[in-house]
Length: 60
Image 1: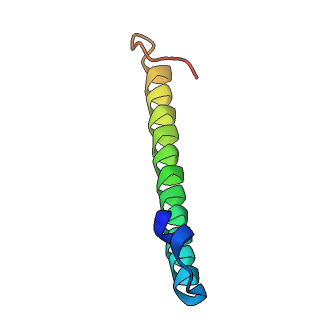
Image 2: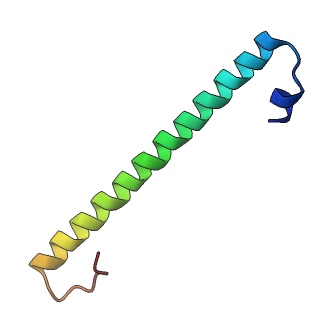
């Protein structure tokens, strides 16, 4: 962020902005993927618990 703020060359600044935007998009995709896995895992656990009511699983 500091390099982006301090860069006076518009070409370099644009490259920094593009890289920064790509990293943010990649991180956002990663978080969304991880949340999907968590939801999937929880759904699977609830389906297993439904078939076996003796299991103790948090309710959604």
